[in-house]
Image 1 (cartoon, rainbow, N blue to C red):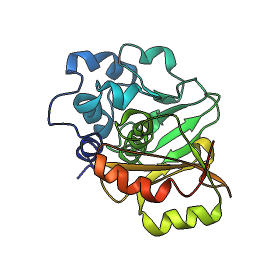
Image 2 (image 1 turned 90 degrees about the vertical axis):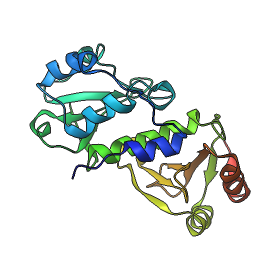
Image 3 (image 1 turned 90 degrees about the horizontal axis):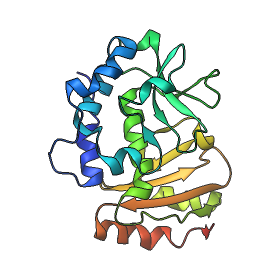
Image 4 (image 1 turned 180 degrees about the vertical axis):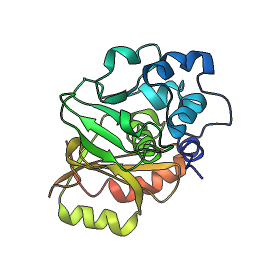
Length: 218
């Protein structure tokens, strides 16, 4: 059974079961670029693709009518970093897979695998966008953490099973509840940058009681 990231994303953003997606007709230009989308990506576009805070607060899910100008010869590009520093895409050779790997490129020529599956990438990106989109903690503040502070974080919070392998020197995501997102940028380095947010006020307060004491504001 193909994984569906949408229910978990709805809980993170406290969304109802409403329709936030593109119609089949609206998706036609995107399908025309590659002959068909992987099942997970098509379902995401049809279910949550039009939700602005989820898909456009920081980085951008490409809209079907704008996707053509971002394409490369060997990859279906579907996500763009907000300043154009990198793009994420799926290899054309993998488009027949229901939940294929996602690759990242900073120059549209050299690619590295960012995520083993599209569903994991969409979950990771939703948690990254949440840093700026959710009502609690969604501001511009980051904290610098050393190894000792990170160890404290990891004693209190579970690491979620998705993240970014390469962008920003790796991004690790933590949180004890579906409503919460704790993001560590530069996760592969000795010193990391912390940001956290939640769609639930009480759970944000519980996170903040621990995390606000750990690092130095940047």
